Length: 113
Length: 110
View 1 (cartoon, each protein chain N blue to C red):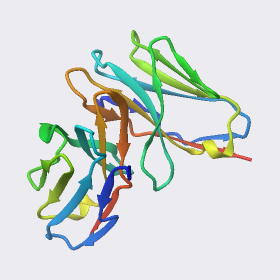
View 2: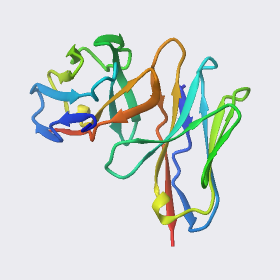
View 3: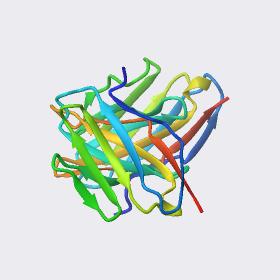
View 4: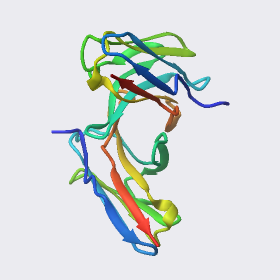
């Protein structure tokens, strides 16, 4: 298995633009997590899905952020409009109920200028 | 108050030293506990789970104190390769919600 795959690896965008981050979880995993990591705040859980259904989105910072999981093999995190304070590394992770470990993708480093 | 709190460090120790990290959590109903390791500019990876009875994996020992709501990680005989950020992780009841602490940075020097 290739592991959790995120794209793009790096994204530089101008303030006000829409940004879409993509994630392909490990096949067979029924949980998917989106995290944001910054030096100031560490690794924050934004939202997680179980069987493609959003279970807890209390970590989503505001309405500019939205996440979808249209099927078991794909999820997106969208920021519209983007702001400089959204600059961070965004990680996607997947797991299953039988396995305690959450497996992370390599992250997307987002810079909003 | 954050759900999971850690001393950010950094801890600077010489090779061969023993170093310990603590982490506190606020939700008394938390069920599962872990330590993850994150290398610079890399993704976090599971280091070890933490069991109520305490557990050891080579030079690493993890312990859980439910009464005081903290977990600990002890690293013996530190190696240069142990330099990383160590993340305390708590999984809460009622679901699969996995919360990370901000991490403790460790630098092991020759």
